[in-house]
Amino acid sequence: MTQPTEIRRARALRPRALDLYSCAGAAGTGYQRAGFEVDGCDIADRPNYPFPYHRGDALEYLAHLIATGEIRRYAFVHASPPCQDKCALTVGTNRSRGWGGTHVDLVAPTRDLPDKTGLPCVIEQPNGRARIRKDLPLCGEMFGLGVIRHRNFELGGWTAARPAHVPHRGRVRGYRHGAYYDGPYVAAYDNGGGKP
Image (cartoon, rainbow, N blue to C red):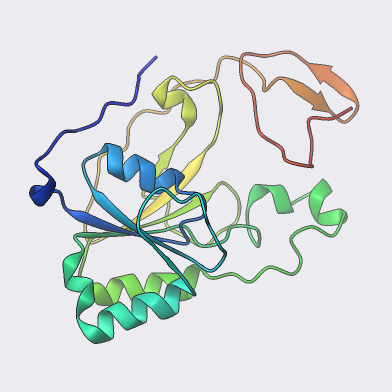
């Protein structure tokens, strides 16, 4: 199993990443561990976000940074627009329960603005029907995690080699349609599946 390793750089030499739709800061933490200073932006109040943070509409904030030239302080833009409109969880049983029908698809407008920055960027979405290029699909199993969380990354202004997808070792532990299955993986469901 791999363990997170901080890349140590002199503070003044660390590039700065902009984390749009930052939520609680998981992506930002990954970038910080990779050696970036991170600033986040989310429309919701995020009192536990671990880095400098702007509360507001991510696209409006990015447009402001571009218009004022403040975008030049960043080396990289990460965006993970809300995924509820097209993610795998809104297909099938959850869709029939009414979940996911009211969410807005922000992938296309999110793609347009980072392209205007001239900076390398990433748009991240979970598996599903989101209209992004799957330039870099990643899975928790690739990193020795006990959680299978497939994520797709559309890369703008740069490329990366696709790592091999490691075969899964079994099922996700929990209830599916009233039957319990054991397996080496766990999953976080909030108020959804995984319950009898």
